[in-house]
Image 1 (cartoon, one colour):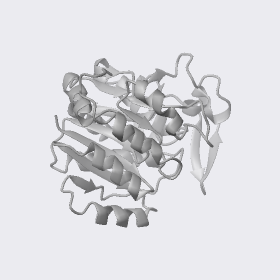
Image 2 (cartoon, rainbow, N blue to C red; image 1 turned 90 degrees about the vertical axis):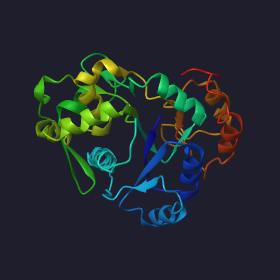
Image 3 (cartoon, one colour; image 1 turned 180 degrees about the horizontal axis):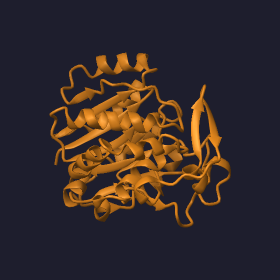
Image 4 (cartoon, rainbow, N blue to C red; image 1 turned 90 degrees about the horizontal axis):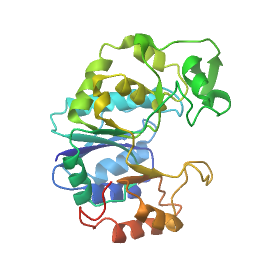
Length: 292
């Protein structure tokens, strides 16, 4: 099983180094996108991974602003680079620099081998009651997708006009983070090459990275292969200071009990001990010890 990880990074080289060291395995490649504004960490990473032939750096670096299409744009551009890089892969996993595995490489590889025909992303229909239905303001499910948004000097501006998705698509939302096989990635890249109406619509939604991939894939021939999970443990209930929670040592028992492959978010500056607990107790378990 050839697994490639696309990792979006903006800080903390030491944490990225630990993430990659623990995921590094036979048949694994890493593609790192570092924000255009992160020149210091870019230099640290390129120097620190200079002797790693399976660590690649995305050439087309984007300046990413929260809540805008810039993140989707950066992901699509990075995926294109991977597809045309010549590096073979069977599974592409999207991670942030604050993600961390909570299963061993053996377990992760075995899981994706057993489920090679499946694709993993969290989703829910925005046409039915969902976790955003009762949210206020721009975060409301209907307002996110129906209103017209644009950004001016980092400020989000909403024009309350009613819009409809092109191609009679049904809107879906969910967590950004996905785990897709090669067939699904190639479909996605082929679709967006000519889906200008879809791209233009999504450029003016609110937090488009939480609706773009779900809407594309759940309205595609890939729908029957989609499993409704992002394979991550994320705590959205606790704000420290903002959700999702930064995971700490006190969260270890919960992580240990989770069937997820990865968790987020971690921060070495907040609690370095949690990394030691995960490394020593979770990352060297045999593949058959717990099924996701």
